[in-house]
Structures are given as structure tokens and as C-alpha cells.
Image 1: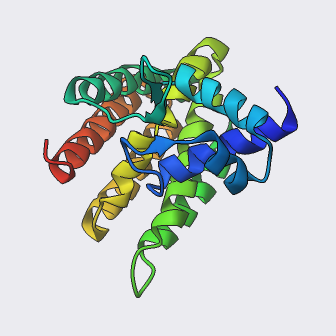
Image 2: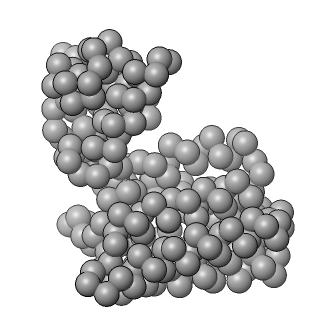
Amino acid sequence: MSRASDTAYALIRSQIGGGTLAPGAPLREEELAALCGVSRTPVREALRRLEAEMVVRRTDGGRVYVADWASDDIDEMFALRSLLEGHAAARAATRITSAALLAMRAVNATLEAAVQRTDAPDVVGFLAANRAFHAAIVEAAASPRLAAMLARLIEQPVVQRTARNYDRAQLERSAAEHGELLAAFARGDADWAQAVMTAHIRRAYHAFTECNGG
């Protein structure tokens, strides 16, 4: 995969994840090439990659558009995240190092600061810290197979959009659940960590469906 294709992939994915390219929006190679500052060939490669990840879809006629997730897709995605991230948390609880735990506490402190900003929560900052926190759990789980399976689920745009619908109270609840995960990790309690993570993902699922007419 070329660097230009990687650039196009990252930019198109961020536009979809951030909601600039909404579900159902058509994706035209020439327009995306201009947006990304590359030729159409890298854009074509990036779209194929996004299609394989089910972020975009293609009609029988070859038109490409942003995936518009059906309720069954969303139900299954969150169910799989609940299972896999719960398992990751359980593994991490028995494998995490003191240094990794300290780093995770620092990440969660950054997340809490984003939530508690005086004027309004910094949702972009929250998302970045949240992504880093969950990535650290997967890394601590020390399972390349699990990491590969989770990579596509965690970064799906539908998942990224969930936190953008949170109010301050929901963001605070998410930060508190991270704090409980840290407590479970500090005690090496796999069952506790798995239960908290499972509940954390299920709450995110209900928040998403409530905000999107589910």
C-alpha cells in the first residue's frame, strides 16, 4: 500500500468518523482525490480498504457510499465489542505491568480533564483519550489475534459517533467506568475487569441507539 493511499485512507476515514461524510453519502473518486491532494489511484485503493472494513459499501453498479448501518449491524457490532473487549479487559487484568497501569491512569486523567472543561466538554479530546485508553487495554491483553479482531470494530465510525452524542453526565459516567477498570487492573481481578468493560460497552450501545432513533 502506497503512502498516498495511506494518506487518502486516513483522511477519508476521519471524515466519515467525524460525521463530515454522513451515512449514505456518495463517495466520488475525483472529489476525494481533490480533498486528499492525491491522484484517483490511491483513492481507489483507500476505498477498497474501507470497503473491506465495511466502512463504505458499493452498489452493483459500482457506486461507492458511506455505510448506513442497519439496526442488526449495530446490534451485532456492539455485541461483538462487548465480548471481545470484555475478554481483553480480563486478560489485561492478569498481565498489565505497573508502568502500563501508570500510563493508563495518566490517559484517563487527560480524559477527565476534557470532560470537566468549564465552558463545555472537549469531545474531541475525550475521543482521543478514550481511544488511547482502550488501545492500552488491548496492548496489555498481549494477544495479537485479539488485537486484530478488535481493530476493525473499535474504529468503526458508528462507534466513534457514539461519544459525540453524550452529554456531560454521560461523559462523566464513562470516565468513572474507566476509573473502575483501573481499580480492577490494580487488583489483578479479571472477572471484575470483564464485568465492568461489558457494562461499559452495553451502556455505549444504549446511548447510541437512543440518540439515533433506536
